[in-house]
Image (cartoon, one colour):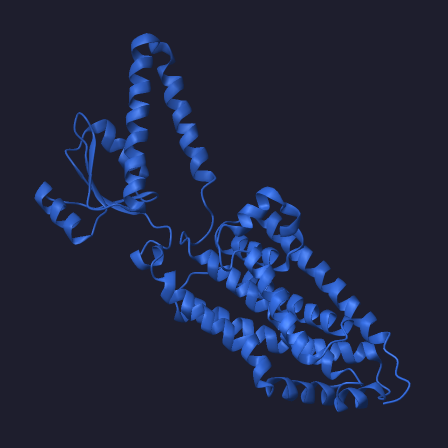
Length: 374
């Protein structure tokens, strides 16, 4: 067993054209993605992670100041300022995103347009709307004012308990999730090559393997173990490159990340083994078709057009359920952007079922092969 593992490993890593598609090409795509739009996303502005918005408050009105203080530390980071002049200087330098004037009529001054500024504007609008409602209630039904105030406090608590649970707000990260999903499917190149080498009528290695006393299922499992080990290492290299070198946040749940990477490696290898075992074509044609069966699902998962998966979800959601690239990108999204364990588990179970089906198809394809002479 160890002997077979060793030489299948050496044979695979020395096959440079196959390793290019499985490792080098996804790394090149990640680099191109980064220089095309990765730095142009929120990560380039320092807003790629959810952080409290820095503001200054001038003219401390009791009511509005109390509202802002209740947000301090969660949504806001209120910085001290000795005067309006100092606050304006901090705004010009980019130290703060805006200045609240907590006078009789609260107002806001911002330095530019962006996500943080939109958050500040929304908070001011919310306060003004609630203040107008409370004023009207106090004038018409003052006895209901305490209940209205309590209701608004309950609403605020509800909003905080159901906030976004992920680690990134960068819209470009979905391209990198789709890219990792594509890289996982690129393991099909390794699987196709391994299945081709096992066919006795096409290669000398296949002829020798066909007469070995080792059971065919054992050979398939050894091949799969070697290929999954190699491709899992490829995916980890890509993940580390995207996260640590390019600086694209993929989340902090590293255990789930390892699990999805492993399942992605497994689905890519088994898909290649099944495709290579069930088709009787030349190696060049198989490799050309493998390009199609890896790129097409990735395109449908949003690799080239981010909204493609959403469009399919609206019109033909069944395709997203059986598309391994879409399932993988969805698992990465559950892990890196928002916390939905039920959906995450469903994605993992789907990948396990797909892998079992592909592996079964590969075994049946190899098992049925019979040769009159070699």
